[in-house]
Length: 509
Image (cartoon, rainbow, N blue to C red; front, side, top):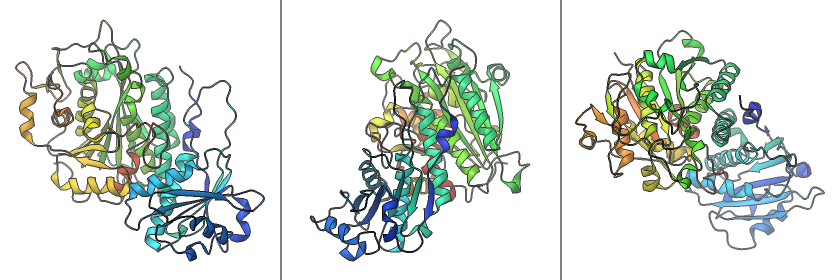
């Protein structure tokens, strides 16, 4: 079995403390201090910072502009890095995170052990700015897996001090979101010869034990008994057994015996995608070890909800396989039957994600959750429509649209809702089966993929589909500077814990 870096690395965060009393006398204990202020801030905004005159000089160098960063060094023996970032009062959560990420890059050349964060200003904006700085600090301090043989030990950020507004920051939720984001990034970045189906299953089992989650694994034999022909069509070309569907369960203390979850999180876990018989070209195949990021988001979100002791029951369903090319691989014009009885005419073997998700959604639907959310790097069409700055969202309940979009805005992980009208189904009609897997041309493929998946979600279950066009982005996204962004965990925590996505939903009869 492949060797993996220590799992504990993905959950480690620097210790967070709230400052009490004056910070001036203790300025030399920090390697860097990061401060967000309004672009209209007056010199008095820096009065409570160490060496306030130095901050005022930095502020007075030129007229501040929103989104810009400037830095200097303080006069103490540690030569503490002083960084100011400027925002307009009405800046969006994404802009706050983006600025915070830029600010943390100022410390990239330094080995920092302890930092301080401050956001002078009114209470509401100060807390929001401080939360953005904290999220960026957590993301910046996290290192992706590395297998370099000659690598200097990386100094780990040990402590973060909140200098102002810290009492209004929900530190436990910030930590849970950061651990979830880091875990998603860590898993997604692992090379495909390190994270194969069997090692992923073992890793998930370790995570389940550490977080007191129950786990069930449906291997290919069990999936044959369940009639999961769509998933098995994809997995049948694998050289080795090990593919399957993982079900994880979290139950709050008040509902330990609950059989049905309130929400089921479903993730696409294609560990490497060759495209199958319809082989991808080199450039398109190169980074296809990241095609499992949907499963990482579902897993990490479940872990975060368990850490926060969410008051509702949650399952996660992870569809784990590769999409290989070989003599046993499925082919265009094959007809397969999914576990809910729907027959599928295969059109293109590189549309494997919707095949694996079809059975996973159908099996999750059997548990009668109030809500299913699935995550998948499903279509290039979503990237073409939105670039990698936002992700697509679809839902079979119009009443959920505003909550989903607001969750994206408020979390800084932005989503755009696309049409979900039934007339798109005419493009998925088959002459030999119940439905075609995809259209021959690529027009609106993200919409057609959502319509396809809806055939495997019970009509009486509310459902949201997130097409993760933002899972990777060159140069990073928002507060995350790495190409693997971990997009999805912050969005889902916001949707479930603050936007009330479950409110008003009934359990299927």
